[in-house]
Length: 258
Image (cartoon, rainbow, N blue to C red):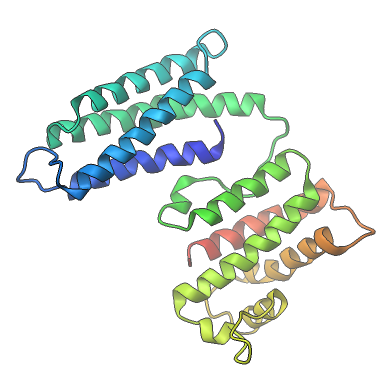
């Protein structure tokens, strides 16, 4: 189970809780005509699919500790499915028990297995699901791809995707802060190229980025340019390692602005 699937499970459980909180408290149970009931049913179907995949991914003979925790999670999911549409209060209790099982028992065991099986150590960017909650899933996918490239030694691909993420986050930050006009060419109506976007950020710092984050912007662009366009240079692990801390700092600050 990769970081994307783990993040999906986190989000599904949070969304189930949010749907139940938003449901009509006076009805006592989920009503078929209520749109929230449809949302709950769809999330529940996804949750059941994920729990089935987990059972297949971690067979008892190979991963006994994970399998035991996953089996408990799967049983709780089945109870919730069998009780649908059922009592809202009972669903709330079941979802809280599910979250406890997932976050306290299943997820830590999965991480232990993933660390033990990892081909190489090190992650260039954080995969903390809380960073991506409420954000564009496109950004999360790019982060996971960057990390996958780094772990598997595809350093040129890693550098190019870092440049792509940088440009995406700068544009999204402008959109969120209402400063798109300062970042677009009035003649074409399109965003400026990354070089000018960075030059303007360095000169005016409209987002209040830290000094270290500002200093990292041109470094991240430069290594991405090398990975994409330089026919004589291959990006090495040491090149990524040299900017890893700056990259994490810069991307996290920009991500919180989107």
